Amino acid sequence: MEGFATPIANKFVSRLKEDKSVGSPVTIPDSPHMNLLGMGTGVKVYSFERSSHIGSKRSPWAVKRVSKHALSESVYQSRLSAEADILRRLKHPNVIGFRAYVPGKDGRLCLAMEECEISLNDLIEARSDKCYGPFPAEPILRVAVDISKALDYLHTEARIMHGDVKSNNVLIKGDFEIAKLCDFGVCIRVDANGMMDAAAPGANMGYVGTECWKAPELVDEDNCIVSTKADIFAYGLTLWEMLSLSVPHMDDLDADISSDMTDVSFSEESFLAKIGTRPCLPTYPLDDEHDPVVHVFNWCTEADLNDRPNAKQIVDYLEGPKTTNPVEVEA
Picture 1: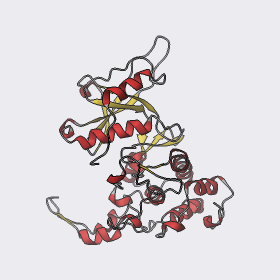
Picture 2: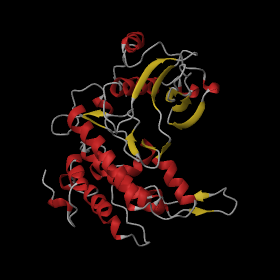
Picture 3: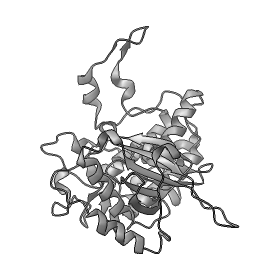
């Protein structure tokens, strides 16, 4: 993210304190006084139980802050500041809600957000551990509709591509009552055609994403095409995760693991060759009710980005009468 202009902290925090959505000044406690929810590259996320008002209970927040071991690397604070700047401008029921961006007691800036119960990835892992097989069609379709609506909003109104769509960045409330997209630290601004806006701040960092969810047009870094269609490809793989209960292409590692777990080897060349391709559907049979999910998965993971739908087409297909060929849905 070299050259990325990070918002000036004092000005930024001051703006947030004037924001009526933030309310009274917020004091974020030290990490040991919060419950760890999860962690990512250079950051950790905690649950912040706020003090209740008399006669009412305040909802908890999720607080993201740069890990202490990563403080010396300015890229992580730059990403967090950029994420806060983007998130506070987004207003959509399927995008995680912004709450505040303020210093904690130790001086580290903290991004406070709406807290959801659990990530889709956690639910996938729990189901896999219990050997339950794929999720039923109904919860997959709920996630599919919610996240496609979030992407439609991001791509057409907010003019950004998420840049890292995967099950880890989808949060679930209740029993699949609603799904919300989170983690906007590597967003890319796009133009009206959904292409990366080369003139926007931070455009020189290009696509970051996560390897296993990378679209084919991004594999060759010297000639990559960065557009919202990469989000669509990764979205298709996220639905595949709910069918396969696995990370894309991880079954292709051909791992050789010793009995004492001290030696693990795999063909990196074989694994990398799978990046940007459509993984096979699970070998176990799927119900007829899964047909719309399979159609959308195939549609979104077409090798040619021009053959993939936009997010609005996905929403129209999922909420309209189901056909055997989603490509028939008009733009």
